[in-house]
Length: 250
Ligand code: PEP
Image (cartoon, rainbow, N blue to C red; front, side, top):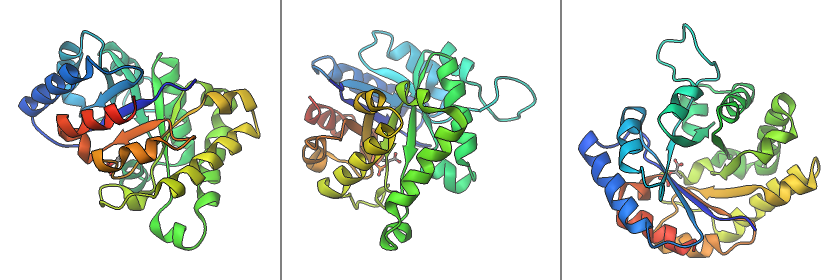
């Protein structure tokens, strides 16, 4: 009922040549995949290249961030409509690195979600707790606050038009992965929290796991009933690893 999505977040890595090779490698391997949606999110300057290289539509293009504003004097920002012009289908919003290094608030993130949806694309809303918060037993409270912050600004309807990525901050780029049970517990909590506002939206909500997902642990994570795909950082920079994760989602 919820088609899995595997999305690669390349972050600020590689060169134009690397991007070209990676677009080519992923798109060639993805042609034989069945029943799994695949997307890659390169740095902004490589979006035009991605639009050309992924033109056959087998792999979808996404962006790593967006402005909440639609146009104007916002130096350095990129508007959602501009991303849509380059063929983007997905936009990552509220990644923990944006929350941490750019002090993004739940309110700002909610406005970004609205802006992405208004431009006809699908946001991937990232949520997750830090190690300190987990160790203090605050995981569910943190996740609830992040969801409620969006709900208050944008309403429940936005959850029908986005995907969520649960990314425990302590698992991102650290090689530490949440166990399938730990991840499933939070994913089920997210679904229940949304179900409290709208049961139908909660059932259709795609919840990806992110945090050191690799070929070796993907199958076990993806087998959990509330894990509907993955947001992949480091392992998305190697076409073979990324495709192995995609195959685990078939
Ligand atoms: C991410 O940053 O979205 C991520 C999941 O990174 P990694 O796979 O490298 O942990």
